[in-house]
Length: 143
Image 1: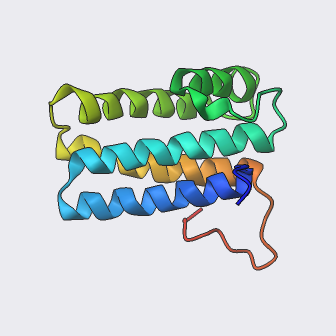
Image 2: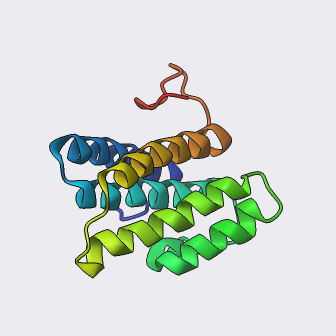
């Protein structure tokens, strides 16, 4: 393994994180579901930045704020991604911080919404930035 994360690898990671978020939610682990939902969005945002050929360093995922800022600067400010998608990513980071670091638990309804939003975010990034498979496979995500 060469350690290089390509857009395709990052989208696969995003898909897996979405599936994990859904499973954790079904299991009743709302904090864990929020964590995985956020990382699904984080990986999809990173994949989108790299696939768009935005002028970012390959290690753009080194800091969360750096990635979110670059996502806003390169993909939201002048398009093609809507400001609503940017807000979802910012909100997901806020909820993940609550789930992971404050000792407070996220409400189940908020976690359910976050998982749905992560699935929509990943699907949107794939639709905008990832070439279609020859088999028209969308890696288990609904369009």
